[in-house]
Image 1 (cartoon, rainbow, N blue to C red):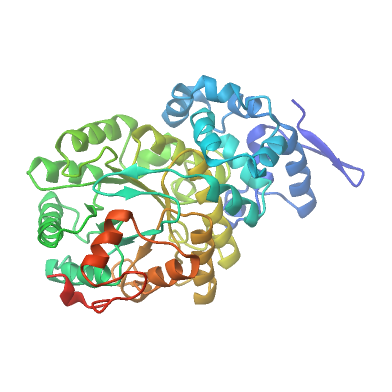
Image 2 (cartoon, one colour; image 1 turned 45 degrees about the vertical axis):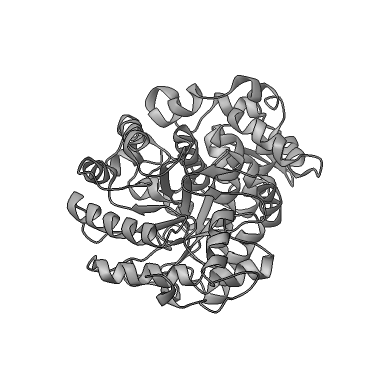
Length: 452
């Protein structure tokens, strides 16, 4: 295994595969903060040259966190499909990139090899790709999942209604939900970030949402994004719960900072499978974001993209209905401006889809990041063109509880119309029956009174 390259007569040597992966990464404020990024543009090119010659087998043999030290690594390695792995293991990263981009490499083939890929492999390929490359490959990856409706079909773009309220006022949550549904949003999930993280408040919100959705026969799912242990207690209280949620990271230490472990996620998954109210079979919901492990000092000297991809490797264990990268939420310390947030969103979407996950994205930024509204709108269009499974949706794109800028209720029908996309088939039929949308705005479009 050769970890050096000569550029313009200067030899660049790297200490490890982990260092090559980090220094081949595009510029990233979080990698700078961690002290792992390339020290110059020339060194970045040298690292990319070295990375392009490493084989996928060498990447498997050198995970960025050792097997003996990290349960996420063990989950990924122990579940790897050996037959799928053998089909690609001898390719170099450069050859793998070229193979992914070939027009004859179709979605069915990518689905077949996904169980044989480790996150380090997909992350490595992403570092050699342009933004358009990332979109081209991700658009080929069709990942179809089912809970109360069918998500991820070709030509579909779904959305999560995020009806957050700063005091968890149930009437406020329900009105925001009704408004979102009236704009054709919410076919991925009605997902509330609670202000009060208790089993009782979680159960109260879920019961109210369940009543609204059942009364109006809305074909979607509901979820309250409290801590997984709180949701487990709420479920034990007997409340309806379609999806079980948790934020996850790409290292054992990162997950410990979230108050979780693989054993706890296993228990939660078993409980929602046994007691959840969705038809299934996919009933888990995970959120991630570049920089989460670095923010807790648990990144093991690895770069953001690779650690983020490892979170997807963990999520794959649970066959989730939703996986969402909240791409600009952590802050400019990790993704400082529009170009970095855009690049990270396309990387995350590519890595998740290539690993076989139904990837969505919260295209967003915090108010102290250097990103404009125009850049954010452009990102939504790029993600839609890349086959992103779902985006967020909330009133005017401004979350009054979490205080960040995201996707508005109005954006979803606009992006669908621009790209010729539709919501899930079940939700599409419901919108037409309600007079909300049928190949264009219906008489009740935007009218929250259409949902009572």
